[in-house]
Image 1 (cartoon, rainbow, N blue to C red):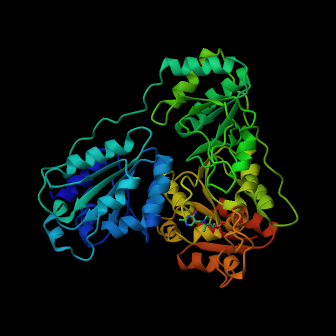
Image 2: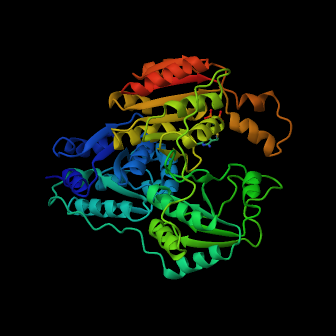
Image 3: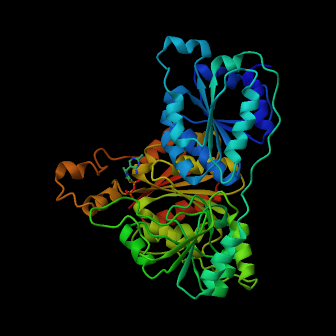
Length: 514
Ligand SMILES: Cc1ncc(C[n+]2csc(CCOP(=O)(O)OP(=O)(O)O)c2C)c(N)n1
């Protein structure tokens, strides 16, 4: 058995079942090993930004890591933006990067580069395997590192000779470090603060944004009236009918300041204090009022769910949570097709337990409002602000959850970054409805241009934010990658197209002209 096979066997033994790849010559032994080992699904992406985004979507939904397989420094670099988003989401990923054979490094061949230098900023763990005898053990350590709570990117660099030389065999799986228990002082402190009657918010991120944590938060709200909030861009949020509703922090700094203006106590569960996404001249970056008592109930690596349950019990909260969203699907709208009518149509037809991958940018509010009382679903968002995440995220989520409908809501500008994910959706026959909001604009940047006070924009500046010349044609782009697609310009046509896409199996794309 060679090193590559010992690594693949180790990954499978450690619970890694999917490898998202875009390989090259130095990864050929790993690719060949995929046929020798049962239990590893290999998924090809035609650009590394799509590959890493898929690994993120998979990890968020499967709650365990996929592996990537990337081609030396340049392949890794192409994938960095979505690894940045995955790092922000604390998604577990075993990020495997091929390298030249160890003895080849001295010749500085064209593809040689500082792989560790590229990988370091996004990796919580990084290691270059020095020998075929250690690569299996290194693989087991990489999985262990990726899964350590709350989840992180573990980069394993695989020199080509490490992969092709003889190995000793696979390594056994290593124990996973789950979330750390929260101290009783933290729970007592939060209970005291909430009992004081001060105006309070519990801000949640991570595992506690799923049903169990939300029930505990809703019980605390039932007892104390505390507001339950989440970040603007939470990695994964369960919401919809029957789920405790969470207020989402708005995007712009002054809106955040306004949201928190009366808040006297902020209790953090896996979250950080809210700050503005960018700095703007004359506007605050720090968004909580002076004197606000900020306390951590649970840090990101700690057990936020158990902490919320312990806090609810310490407060003597009732069993039944407050704030549970009712089922209230909007009627089908008439009139103009815009993000609000489109959102109502999406909410009307959204199947139970759908997964929404949301990179809708300025078109996102409509669906966000309308789906609050739609069928229960998971919502995944753009965690690191690096656009071009939504399509691959949806694709990876579809591989993690083959029995659930995936709905990807995307701005046309962001979608152009990683549209190769559509090809993977077609090849793997994934059940994704891709809704492209075709406003032919970098609309958010038109807003930002005014907000940063850059003066009166001239035609050159405005043309940098405009996507009309030439017109994108999303139905052609989708057809070119094997995905059925339709363009809609009216609410009736969108309702028909969305209803039929939801009913059908397999990938579809709807280009919504707004
Ligand atoms: C990797 C990366 N490059 C550039 C940007 C800057 N940027 C932010 S939003 C945006 C345009 C988004 O356009 P679109 O997806 O069409 O959404 P819209 O703003 O039109 O609603 C750009 C270029 C970014 N956030 N990330």
